[in-house]
Length: 138
Image 1: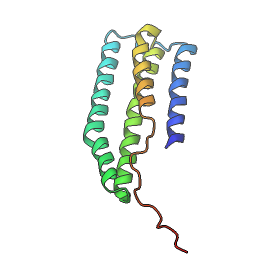
Image 2: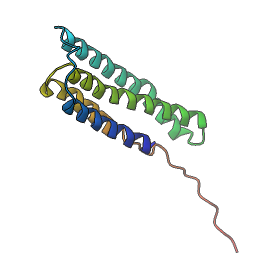
Image 3: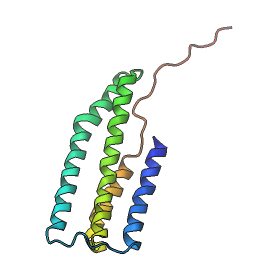
Image 4: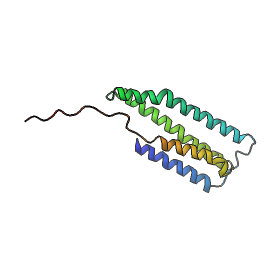
């Protein structure tokens, strides 16, 4: 999970770098482009919050209750992956916005929110096993 997280952090940083170094394509020259991307990013943040509260946190609680349940572990990992993809896609909105000819000042909120959400999703240990080996008797 940490390898995937590091990969998406590197990808987010590359998105910012590409947006700053590559020339704009001006395919977003219509007047409402900024509003459309802002609406899409807001909808993505709503999906992120819904997944976090309705799916991820209950899955993490299920692991704490039943750490040996593989179904609960798979559900938790799947929800974490979905959250990570939602966070990373906000940075992609910033890249598309930048490639459309917008300024860094206009794309910085997309970049910042995407990178911060991805950093916040650092893989944590959600359970600990209370089982210990029985003491050795001689």
